[in-house]
Every structure is written in structure tokens, then in C-alpha cells.
Image (cartoon, rainbow, N blue to C red; front, side):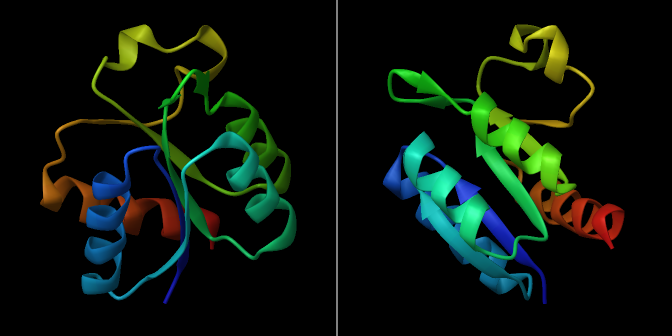
Length: 117
């Protein structure tokens, strides 16, 4: 069972992802709804992989992505804006399109966990 950080400012989406992760046999870390909550979890909790909503209210998740990168934790972004809207520094990371295709989420999490193992 992998520990997967979920960062999304929309409670229903975070809850849906958490339920999917449980269904797939993983444990949800969080979910975090703000950048500050996510950064605290990254600093204090074992995380095997993460799914980061790009837009968190008036902020973005890129500080969280940087913190995860420094710890060697694989992650993917989730956005409704498409990969082309990502800053150059993060374009190499997987971008999951919203609305979610549940099978794609399952494969993505499996791939992230395998890459961090």
C-alpha cells in the first residue's frame, strides 16, 4: 500500500480522489486544500507519490512540487487547463486532465508508485 498525497482545493474532488485511492489499495495523505497544508504534510509525513491540483484558490502548487522534488517523491499535476499551460520548469511532469478518467488515475498512481520504489 502506497501513501499518496492529494492536494486539491475543491473538497469534493479531493474526497473523490481519496475514495479512488482507497479502492485501488492505497492510503491518502491529506487531502491538503492549501499550499501551506500540503507543505506541512510534505515536511512531516512519509509520502510515496502525489497528485497536485495546479490551482489552489489564489495560489498554485509549484512550491509543493519543488518540495516533493527535493525529497525525490514522484508526482503528477491535475488541471483542467492542459499541459500547455504549465510553466517550462514543470512540463516534463505528467499532467492529469480534469475531469478525471478513473482508469487513467489508477494507472498513473501505479506508475508513480513504481517510479519511486
